[in-house]
Image (cartoon, rainbow, N blue to C red; front, side, top):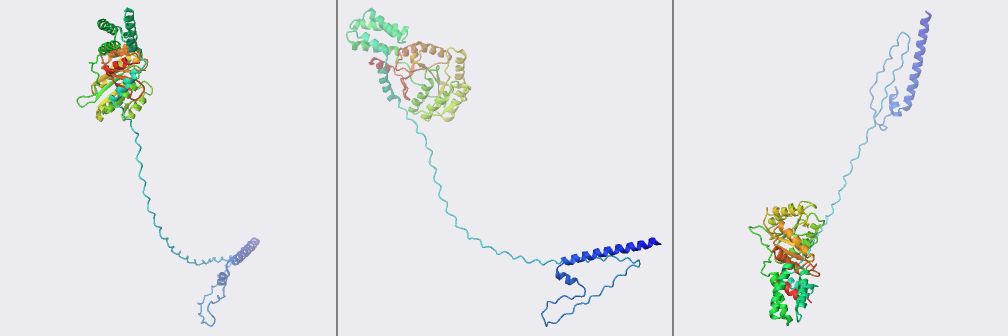
Length: 437
């Protein structure tokens, strides 16, 4: 029975330890609780009345004392039940409502300043080309003062008191070296000998008149030198300009546009020279000076396509004339010349080509005749433009090229000025040469 004693003794010891721990824990909690709460929880103590002295005291309800629970007979003291902690929540203080802030009165909006009127874009002023009639007189004077030895030499020879065979030999040599050509030289010398043999050459003025008549006959004033710049059936006139590089072809087209504008015509330029670098830019610059639009294509593109588009643009705009530039063709290159024929055929799908102008450098002499002959086989050349006729040019090329092709010289260029291109007049040309000093 000894073990029962030891069990009871151990249980009592354990109970004492638990009770001691509970008491210690309770004291710690009571130290933390606020005094008001401890007073409320202490048994048998009445809370202090907050009523004023002398006021009648209201009896509080009696609280029945709880009978202690019966301990178990086993003698084990149960652990005291911890009192639940009561936390008094402080009443939340009412949050004061924020006072409504007075909105400031809106400031009056300033009146919008009037927008300045946009300045009109400055339109570049266009050149006013010189009328063709006035430039003819100026070009005649320039040709008369040029260093042209052809007719000066003839005039000095024919002014001699006596002309022998040696003199006529000198006349023939002068004419041939002036690019007049053998056939035209023979014809002129025979007529001069016939007239002067009858009338004599004692009077230099008479010799000059004979020479003028024979030269004028060679130049042939009866040829039609007017530009075919009038279209038919509502289509614009189409002028195709051909020639080799270096003859001044693109520059001549720019000057021709000025001549047409001076005559009151509306013009469209076609930059079909797609092989030469900056050719389209050059032509566009010429056109912009007189308000003429330029149709161009990509560099190295199909020139026939550009020519086609230029004519289509002219028809759409109701233009009077379309002038088409072409690449400078070497007359010895068959493929390039064939392409020139293709350009003409493509253009004629839109409108007929009314004029084909061949530009020849007057200083090239017989080489210019060779070029003219080859170009005439590819396209139907209808007119000649002689550029650079002033200075060292030999006037005989005018007669030679007309006799070779049967095509009239229609335009001549006598300088680098923008208006140094004029219609060719046979009488004015011969008169200017005979008065050269």
